[in-house]
Length: 425
Image 1: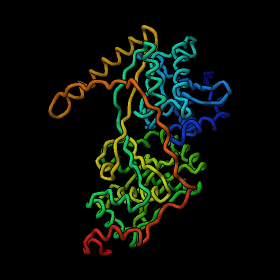
Image 2: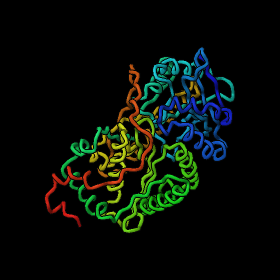
Image 3: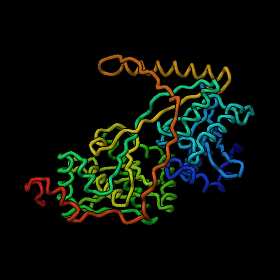
Image 4: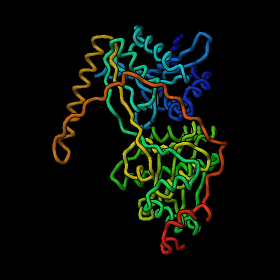
């Protein structure tokens, strides 16, 4: 295996197609997401950061793996090795990219490079790898190889992501929901969709995108402020990143951005991305003055129905343990965070110091919680054996118009509701 380090984005651009092939449809691992993030958060926005992407080629010269990393200097922790996409944009399912069946070879080659890195430009002190799917075989294999080579490794659970495994038909999906959820769906259809009060605006062109972005950002801002919070779009850098990445995703037909108007007024917006047969619900906005009408429920219902009609095998809510996700029959997907010390005494010392500081921080937070202190949770061990996980086959056909409801679609729901609940308002 040959490991080729890249420290310049322009040198990587000719290999964008190989990058996307190895990303297997995950938008957060794609060339567009990673390269756009670096332009906004690395090259221009962070003078302490340096690109450190590793490409892995086999004997025939075929790209079989890629480590999408950068190094950021920290006064306390030294040179931190992180995934592109880290930080406030909340990228999910980050990890080492590897061709199916080549995970072990890629992990070994990258581990060799990490252990041997001695040149000033390549030196790293501690790896900080967050948002790693617990089923990500390549990344877990890399961590195991590093641990077998006596590098100090720390693992702990991160915020779970939530995903719905979609059936083949909408009727099948309805059958998995609770009676109360089905009734809520029927009410939304009767009150807003069949009555003609609600319109679904789908982004198809650059002109559509310009309007939809403003609607999304404004509704998101208003909703977060109503909760006393600042949303992600409050950051000008984050907003600029999303404006640019949405343009690229739209050009690739990987963006599904739509918003709902009720009686001519915007009430909800959904920013989703598609890839590998999965529809990822990344961000949303809703009118806080219309919460009694459940506009978020309505927009999610439309998105899930669209995903099923287009043949997607999963609908992913991404991170966060909000109760509404389980109501849609989503299941949690464990996510891991790793810290790895470089094979030098100072690197190991920094990891020990980080772990001590992390425990102090957790104890302080526990003391501030109602009810007082809670015991520390032990760090989850890295599994000693990893089974290679093959990507689910994509069932996604060519893009189509977002599903619009018609009366026949809702008959199975009406049959389960009382006559009073099914009356059109």
